[in-house]
Structure formats: C-alpha cells, structure tokens
Length: 115
Length: 114
Image 1 (cartoon, rainbow over the protein chains, first blue to last red):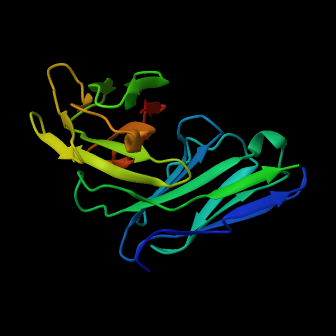
Image 2: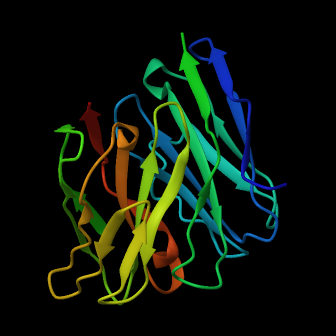
Image 3: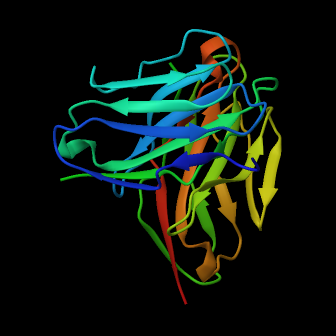
C-alpha cells in the first residue's frame, strides 16, 4: 500500500482480555517500530524489528507485551491480560534500513481503551 | 544509549511571533536528526531532517541546523501561524546495528493564538 496501515483504528476491551494490534508496513521497508503514546505524553519506544536480526525488545513494559513480525511484512503487537494503564494510542512506523538518514513513516495508530 | 532532550511545553505564542524549540541529544557516532510534527487528530509526519554536521533542514518555513559541537538541533520559525499549532517531536536515528532505531524526545505542544 501507499502508507503504513494499522488495524483496528479503535479498540475497546475489558480489563483482563487479550488484544492483538496489527501493522502493515510500507512494502520494502525492512525496519519496523512500535511506540506507545499515552494521552498528552510523548512517544514511548516498545520494540524494533530490523530485517532478520533479533528484535530490540528493550522497551516492552512487561511480559504481558509481545510482538511478532513475519519476514519483512506484517507485525502484530499482543497485549495479554490488559490493564487500564495499557490504554493509549499504539503507533507503528516503518523505514528503509539502507541509509541512516532515512525517515520513518507512521501509521495512524490504534487507540486502545481498556475498561 | 541514545537520548533526546527537548524543551518542555506547552509553548503559547501569538501569530507572527518567533519560535524556538530547543533539542539536544546524546549519541555515539554520527546520528541523523529529525523533527516530526503531530497536528491535532492526525498522525506523526516528518517536518524536516539533517543527516550530517552543519546540515540545515527546512520545510514550511521551519529550520533546524545540526550542530555537532553543541549536540543540538533546535527548531526555529520566524513567523508562526495559527495552523502551526501542533506537537513537535525531536528525534534521532543512530548509525550502526541496533542504533538504527529511532529515539524521540517527549514532545513540545505549541499553541499559536490569532
């Protein structure tokens, strides 16, 4: 597609349920990022995938959070046993690896509300 | 690790005022530097970038110069408009290996009043 696509755009879930968020990066982009943005806050890094390298998971806040990526395509971010503090906008971005100065392109985000 | 520190907001200006949002960074090697903007209700989009020392990025009247000696990338605009009201994020992308990930500052909310 033309840009980074995220689904769903909005998700309301009950506390304790698992949720799965999806990101379709721009075709050919080898790098993929997940960030979390709480209301009125900055971007909190979660995880970074780069090609076939081991992902950088250093930003995942707890073991309830996990992410997968199949090759250089779709990624899913899974949050198990959701808590109210997980409510936020989850942003995905992708970029080309080939040059350090290459920008990242962001999706519109998934707004997660845990009730 | 890499880090970005930017001016805390919110910043409120009158239309046609001069804008500066400070950004400093810590990184090894030669990072690339970016300013992203998030308009109300929209996603993040790149505003400008610079990839090496003394480069000046510019777009929509905004400018920022990559200063390696002061590890800074301050955003400036000579005359702001109401339509510039948004959250501005400074970011860096390191060089080499896992340093390629993007690191963001906390964002600065700018409100421009008519």
